[in-house]
Length: 236
Image (tube, rainbow, N blue to C red):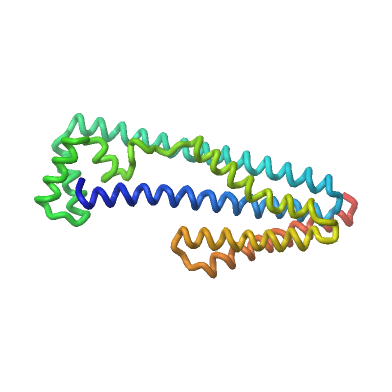
């Protein structure tokens, strides 16, 4: 395998792992924010522990199932597209092999190889496994590692659930007078951590990512608490 194709395969695997990690962090972040907004909103209307627990559990289950279902549908669509692209590439290799060899040569040359070396590399890759070569170099797909919708669904379900457990436990475990301060403090700390993690995984500036995350969570809890307090005062 040439250096260019080795870097392509290595970079694709690394990118795939980073995407999974980023999705897990964002799923946990969604679990924290949505559940915190729900339980803090209910806490604005009542301090009954049973009501808070019921609302939090309902939000956790609804959110985690929604995330899992959405991720399953999304990744299934992506997998179908990958399979269709591979089928088309296989058909083109069968019907016009010379044109596909020239295309692979052009792609390798575009990655920095000299024309002669690109032609030789394309021929060797084609002889070894033409479909795999075109899938990786042209389509950016590893035929042996197509996206798995079940893995994505379970990852989203678990990540959201883990994130949602924090505000749920924070709102029901402490005494009534400490529930809101403990929940708000723990949620903002968790959002700072997920903002930091997402920035590091995306090689982005940490400060604005953390600030956006914390301010967004604080705004969500403020709005839902105010709404809950107004509804509670109105006796709804």
